[in-house]
Length: 236
Image (cartoon, rainbow, N blue to C red; front, side, top):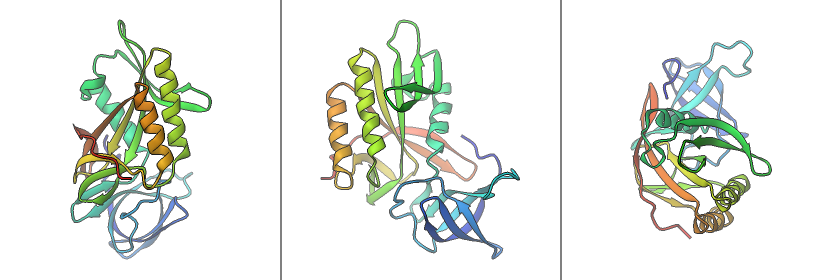
């Protein structure tokens, strides 16, 4: 996934109302940017952090700037939760996810379950249809360990239940966690932040839902899927 134009550097003043961030650009201009992230952004929302923004030329947009990356001493972190689907779409097209290679058709945003759209529906001759859900990960509370979620997610727990329902029908169901940072060597569920989600994950995987986690390579011109990360013991 490539950014459509060069990113612009700034300094975070504050992130508020979940989807807004006040930022000072390098030339001293104060702007308000769209922050495409409904989560808590723990460790990524402190005043003074260097950030990187994209700018849209669309005159219909209320906010021209979008917050894309936060710069930490350990590296860049992607905070735009819309990007993992784009990253995965590119990786699927290139056959970079070995566990999901070989499907001939990939369709995004297909309706399924009671209230949801699956992120990707994969099909191919001689294999069961596959329902693939993608989740963004950027929480780190101890060095090297990526965690999800960073806040309570009732919607996320529902997605796990709906994946389990697809598996019960004899289809394939996969949850893919995409870690938008480069300083992690393992992944775990943050059960202390959302016990209900952790319980839903345990139930879904016991019923045959597959769980994958991949790291990413992040640069100021784009983000791409990298290597698998192992699952570590869940924080309780």
